[in-house]
Image (cartoon, rainbow, N blue to C red; front, side, top):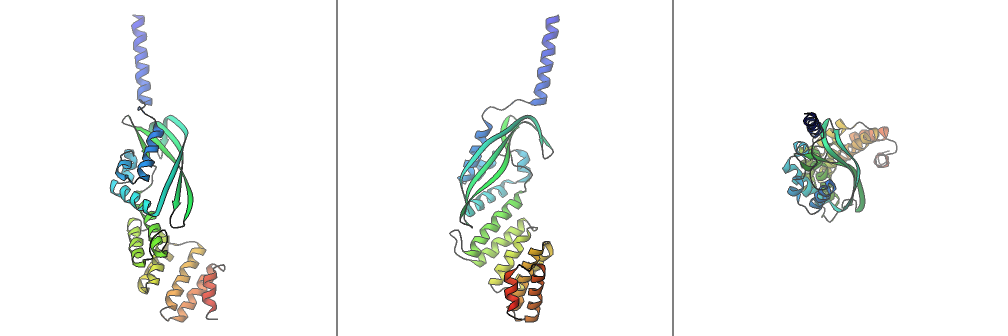
Length: 269
């Protein structure tokens, strides 16, 4: 009888531990992360998406993820990835989500930035978590639309400047900048770049509208200075000289180190 009670008690303890900790999936979580980055590098976006946890998929829809990978591979080249296990936990809360059996990795992505034509290292923390007895990747609270917007803005700049193997095409740049804003209307820097592209195309009304939106969102003095200098350029090129001078003065007032604005103002003084 005593032996039976002992067996029952051990069974209860084992079951309790199983419920609290969960059963670890087979396989190496680091391999899952390595395979994920291989898929990204090779442009297998759909395959990479299948390795994400449901929580990440809730924030990053499949069509957005595929678009993000496609645009990202056009604006940069992933050379290699260094993955180092940092910690592992039986239970851990990340972004107010409780996971059982979770591995934390330090990741270094070595990329070739095609816009700036230089090598860069992007460091991040990635989690591999137990989801329905499978290792899945949790990317955090990032929003897919914002990620797409960032990559589209880089690609647009490549066309705007004629860099990264792209021929200069301001109309293409305008289209991509607008697409970036459709995905993330709050991306203030894009409004400035869009205004500049419109300005270079001689589409001054649209350039004014874009830079006004930028100035409405920008809070730094340096940023305000850039915006007012752009307005000065627009007004100067539409022969509204007095108004242009006002904006150049505003630009210098916000940032007396803005040499572009100082040079533009000096033409009239």
